[in-house]
Length: 258
Picture 1 (tube, rainbow, N blue to C red):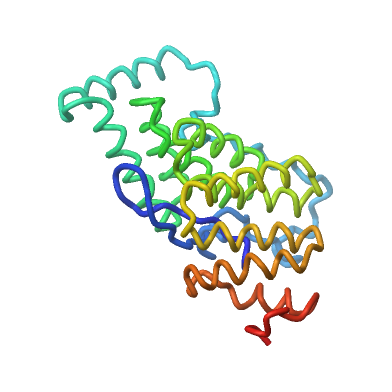
Picture 2 (cartoon, one colour):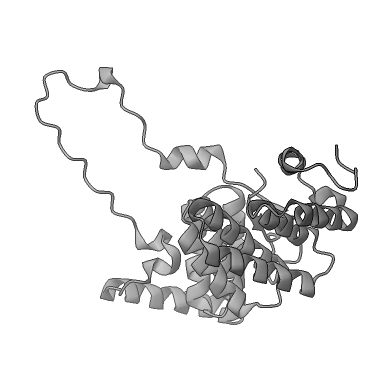
């Protein structure tokens, strides 16, 4: 619960305020095939046929799967770019428009449609950090942590002063550390959180993530230190479920939380 990903405000341009959003149950249910009960299996079937492998449309893969494109795909992209040239002032504006639509679909848990919009945003402007950010969030909500980190890092390389994006990246890196005990992910997460706080000393969420980083490494005193910094910066940033877990490890040295 306390490792959910931050999303930027659904607006064109660089996001300034984090919004806590999680993948909806409906979206998860849509990606899980219905379980087959014994009654649904034909009792006389001696041979179980292998289900056909699902072919995933490259349009919903981050950056179109980074695959070579067919002549028909290239022709389709040229038509799309020409249409945008006629309907927008420039491709940067068009890219921002499609990225904004992507965030709207993320909020509605329509991840495939969101991914396609972010891909189009990247096609229009490969320097649009929001497109990579959005693809990172989509990958995260699909539980593809490695791809999420890759996309978020590419976004951060284009917007390295965006504290919210850096905190999102660190959030996924911490989850990767939890999943695989990947020391490098912890080192990267701490580095990105330190930079986020340097850029925005009032960024309470970054303090909470630093608290989590210390919790995961059993540095409970430092974990409490950053909880208190987050609390004094923005009380609403404190996750009480996380506080409960931390209290089980060590009482609050200040006595603020019991």
